[in-house]
Image (cartoon, rainbow, N blue to C red):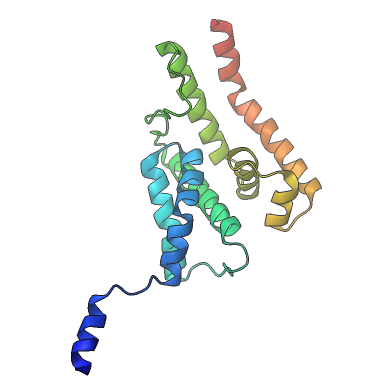
Length: 188
């Protein structure tokens, strides 16, 4: 009788492990954060896998019990920025190949839609070219919607430092994409 009970118990699915529970609860957040930065569903899935594989392999040494949302958001942002930087070094583009239907207006003419996709690509590349801290702060502020105080708390720094870094990042991005904006404005 005991052997039959053991065989029956083995047929039942095991309760989800801690990592599986974490994945089920937060995979959507990680995917969305990665998608907003990369602009590509395939790249966002790669980032999602990277973030959770790092946890499985034990490469990350963070106590997830305190604030898993903050940690996983930061991990997704950093992995996305790493992906963007590696693409920049490899001179491969492809970020603008996938149009974001959510951001694209159905009433735009094809030329305006192309210009928007081109601008999105330039912004993503420019953000990917920011330093690690600046890129992370920029993504937390403008992609994830955190305010400066929340960013300071997440990164263990002051609001003043966050404000200065974000100001410098915006200034750099303006310079990098300014020529495109001037050129595009002249056409209209």
